[in-house]
Every structure is written in C-alpha cells, then in structure tokens.
Amino acid sequence: MSSDPVEWCLFVQPQRMGRSTLCGAGIRQQCGSRLRSLSFAPVERGPVGATAWTATFRDWRRSYLHASRTMIRKYRPEDLAAVLTVWADASAVGHPFLTDEFLALERGNVEQVHLPSAETWVWDANGRVAGFIALVDKEVGGLFVDPVLHGRGIGRSLVEHARRLRGELEVEVFEENGLGRAFYRACGFTELSRGVHRETGRAVIRLRLPSPEPSTERS
Image: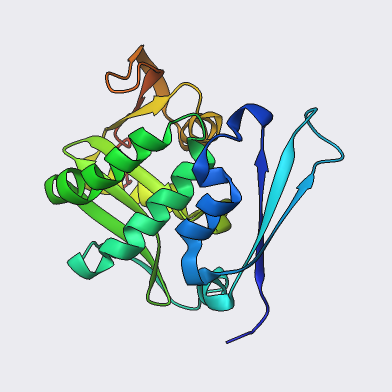
C-alpha cells in the first residue's frame, strides 16, 4: 500500500464556525488515528471571511480510492463502525446546517433505530465500506458516501441497485442540502411535495424516481 497521505479540505463559512464537527477539536475527535495532520488558514478566493481546514489523512483510505475489487452487498453487523463513520463524514459535508445536538441524537438513531428497521446495502471497495443506502419499502431512508469518494458514481450505483429492487423510489431531502438535491436531480428524481422536518423545523422536499420502463424486445 502506498504511504502517500490523502488530503481533504473542508471550507467553512463564518456562520458555521460554531459547529464542533467543523472545528479543529471536532475534526480530530471524529477522525482519530486516521488523521495525520491538520492546518487552518483563511481562503484567499471565495466568500468574504471564509476559512478552511486542510485535513491530511493516513493512507488507509487509498486502499479504496483506486480499489481493484468493488461490489454492492448486504449490510452485515460488523459493518456498523464503518457505516457510522461514513454517515458522520458525509453528514458534516452535506448537512452543515444541522446542530451538534441533533447529529449526536441522530447518530444513536442510525445505530439503534434506522439500521435495524431498514434493508441496507453497502458499497464494498477492497473490503472497506465506502457508502451505503438504507431502504424502507420504496423509501430511501439514507444514502451516504465517503466524501473522499464523491463524484465516482458510487451513489448513483447504489440508487440504481435500489431501483432494481424496489422499482419506484422516494426520498426526503433538506432544502438547504444543495449537494443532495443536485445529486438526486441528476439521478432523475423529481419533486413531489414540500414540507417541514418535524425534529429540526427545517424545510424538506420529497422527491420521486419512477419505476424503470419495462424493456421491449423484438422477437
């Protein structure tokens, strides 16, 4: 395995600096032994007052950055720690508007409520969990991919897998989650309705992806 570090920059808006998941102590706590070094500096080009943490990780992630063996498989109990890590890392990027208190509560719900009640599939890359999708009937209860691997087609592959299993899919996404909304739009989801998330009071959008049309083969 290569000993080269993997670098990841977290760009932080001034109003979000209070979130411990995006402060130095929070990053160190979340990453633990994976973190090799951490630096902090203003952003020269970007929103006024924006800052950036640059986290350099130890090379264990590289084993699936260029994975030679990938598969979608069912979640196993021994995947729990890896799934929670992916959930926390992806939530910090996609949901920076949520409070630490809510995220701490939700982490417990993921482990104790959501995973036991859902059919969950993981993206396995060289034996490591890089993403997962949790299904409750036709509902996508959760879809999270390690941010280091965003843009590599993992999320889309998980959605396509779920669609083959369920046909029509629905998902609820926070209106403020621009990354998530763009992703689902690219996958073909369209808006069904709007509402308010009961636990946080934030606006949410319900999206729908229709069942794939049956193939018509000529005899």
